[in-house]
Image (cartoon, rainbow, N blue to C red):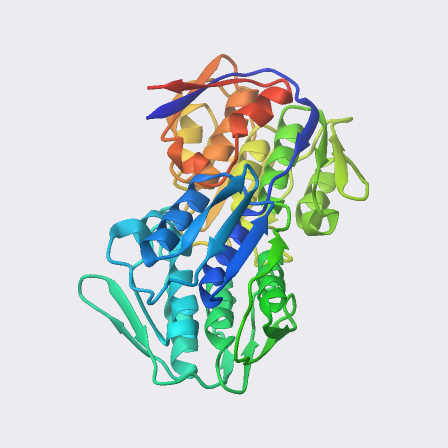
Length: 419
């Protein structure tokens, strides 16, 4: 196992390049199952979750691997069924997209209940509702295996009871080959929903309305291989934006879509950060004392739940009081106990944290409890006095490509050590 050692007190300066969006990549990669042909995907982050999905595809019979450091190929021609026998699905939440893709192409699929970060209960009832509306039968065995199958899939009108990114994508995957029209109402609107729909359309699907709360899918007979480039990672970019604010830094964030960053940009400007937007880059710089703000995470275009933890670290370092309300995930404040070891003054429940800011965080040994919490602890280490040691960094590697190298290029004193 590896760990990070961080020496705090350095102001971040320089330029950082943002990679492909993890949340888009782990939806688009399984979507290739729908196509009995070869797809080439560019701007793919070289992270643990991508490696797991490539392993899943190979397990199913596909030819899949990296072409270079930022692109992969997938030839799903030889996949004959979507039955995952082993525990690969337990390694990541997005493994459930195999169900939608397998149901769409083969009218059946089976996998174990998905894994991923432990941030509270994340039910799949809306996925099941969508599959059943299309004509599938869904069975969950006592052992936790999910089986879906259908004689045929027929388009339907599906209203999601709650806005769910995973359910929206899974229903899109299943509905691509369904007879007639499928309408998803109260659909999620995140950028990676749009990216997944654009990829499916590039293969020959007929999807309209992605990015709005109503998505219309006209079933098609076949899909063909294509070349596609994944959008930049708004969460990775947001992490560096918040790190710049926390360290009172001045950085250029390159290879981004500024429009996707608006929920984060608005809050940082409200706090007093300077932000200048260019075509595909952004300058984030500290020029005055920051003030605390209140945050509530919401589905896009609200403030993203995946940046709640880094923002909580920033707020904990500012004099004054603030409140962070978690409006998406059920139990995403477990990492706060690690922050409190560093001197943070935070009271929290499953859904809310009340913060009394302090500028005296102190380095100590902490552990990453999940992916985004790990990124938050890196930021805490950057502003803490002394040395911070972060363990369980395999969580961080699931979603951030070469994170220590990118921070070092900005001047941070961080190194990876084999434990």
